[in-house]
Image (cartoon, rainbow, N blue to C red):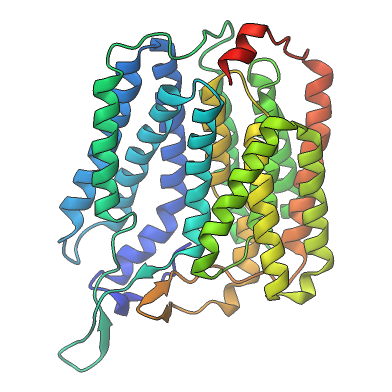
Length: 418
């Protein structure tokens, strides 16, 4: 999350930074819901122009938002700007899921791109601009560089525009689902709403063991209900994403070297390919359980470089593996799973609370800064909480398999996914 007391770092007021930090989880949640709505309706329309056109609108809104605010003054509402950015990103994420995921290569690209954003966010730093001084002689820095950079947004805008022109007459982008098409929206609204409320509530009661237990139970129950709302066994991905989000929130390093971005992306890609070839969702859950247990038992090691490297690589591989091993039949389910990873979990509140006394304002190094990520937990409570949620997901997957019949794959479906 963002620090809330570095008004000296730019011309933005401390109030705007406070509002940005407080509203950030809600902006992410809103973007995920929008992504689900767009994905469901683009899939229902089942026409290439609808999906690609929606993606083009999303990236156009993002481009206008970044251009309009690049020269904004101190009075600019950063929370509003970030909310618009999250909505635009949600439109693009959901629309592209409906537009491109017809076979395994496209699923690989979409999943790799979405998960790569997490790896890049951890590894890459943001340029802080030129150092200046106020009239009183105090140090001050120009506003942070745009993230994502404007050149990348423009390049994406051009690529999606070309895709829209090329696929404007395409039909049959998704196989029809006989179940309720609104199910991913309902499931997403339920789980994300419960998670958002639990995260904000637990942030104020993180020292209370009973409160932690209630938050864990609410997460597991909401996840199971959401999984049951989805057709057939598509809810498997939801349970995997919940466990991945919880364990990732507790074990992901606060900071990794910038050079680690490419190896982590390669590890994600390797995990996706492995999931295509040897799909075993229960094994993925058990690995996440063991990873959380290892974190709890070694919490005294804190920020050990070897421990951080192990967590980074395992999370990258298992993250990619989860999204390919589950293989839902309905593409909006993939959007829901990715949204669960993006939305802060209740474990993030515990980690934030345990590391609050160690947080500074901003860390500047070699012309870049880190937005003061939450330090690596020096207490075992985030790991035990993640372990409890992961075990709950294991039992949830067992229940899902018992109550839902396996999907009988037809030769035409297998051929279409190659």
